[in-house]
Length: 256
Length: 286
Image (cartoon, rainbow over all chains, first blue to last red):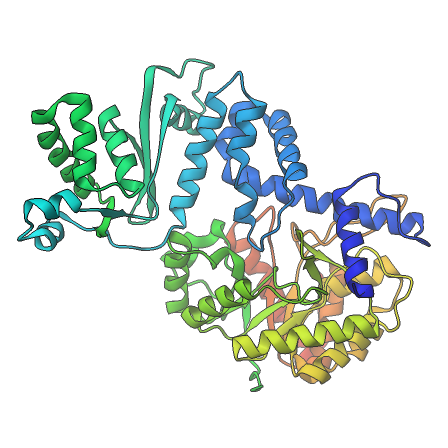
């Protein structure tokens, strides 16, 4: 390792570890300068997390959020050039730290999904006419083998709390704790309409079907799985209706 | 490496708080400067907004993550994304800082200080050569603010900058506030700094505010969260007299005020630059 590489590795370690001994010859003035870099490093990362998880920070309060953010940064120091990557894995950290308040990680998931949707690749969704043209002349086996690609902004998760309502309430400063547990868990989808990230709850069967097709399952396999839940006759009709809604909402990028 | 032609306008950083101002009207600036990394994304509103601003104004790409002083070399994925953005924006130029931000294991997302040694100069120049070759253009590098200096420095910062431009053909982004902050923190003469840099390589000036030092260490911090102070305006007047017409920008990254406040600061920069260039006495208070 070169002298410069060794020096930079040590300086980085100084930023990450409060109690690391100072390099030989360093004075209190050096220590004061180092503290400025150390504080700036942590503040920037915590600010980046607060920027992405703004509503989550408001929900848990500033002190609790700062502690969670500091825990995340210490546990997973960043290694990418983009600050966006600092926010990766924070939902899982919140699941662990707020195990008794599961709405916290669910709200954070919604914010993280919306953030990713905000900067996802610009891909024009396939509309109903485009789908009809692409599937014209499909034989039964073509339908069975049909696989879909979805917009890169699309995310799906089953949530126990109505964090969509919580998120909106936080924006209006009209939230009440706790009060957001739903009677039963429900799938939520997040995607981007033109430039605006948006979210919408969907039914259980639709969430399951969409999740399977996002994982690369074929249309025929999805219908078969649906039939196991609601019966053969309804499955074909329901699958067609879901496909229509996905096209209508602009979730589908193309046919594979 | 091809030369960068001088461009002597006055500009502002494009910040989210002012997106609507830039999109809905004619902001009286000659260019907008972006933080490159904020637009090195796959798509969505940031790039759509940038495209609209670019249709109205020349744009400068100013980065914070190249880590030109990294002993581990440059991140080629980063360079590829930067080049992709440059092809979309067709900027006046691309700049970054004379600093390092990463090791092979971690990224600090902060502008960390380099020792001014022959070894560091060798590393920096090799990295600049690599970056300029990948990007296919000469770059500008900014003098950073720093809060400590190394015991084994072998040259002054301005000597390092001068040799760096000579060896690589790169240009300088002179941050006048950073000169002031570092001069105060390390006890060197800001005038000596100005006199020591190659004036013909400076293509842009940054002006910004800093946080005053606290006792007992009294270290100034480059926070970009307040107006430019009188001492920095005075140094800017000297820089203008020395450099001639150079693109100048007010850089505000935190506590961002309404646009008219920044435009008033930019008007003050115009006034000082005009006075300095005409040889008439400059009024340096804001």
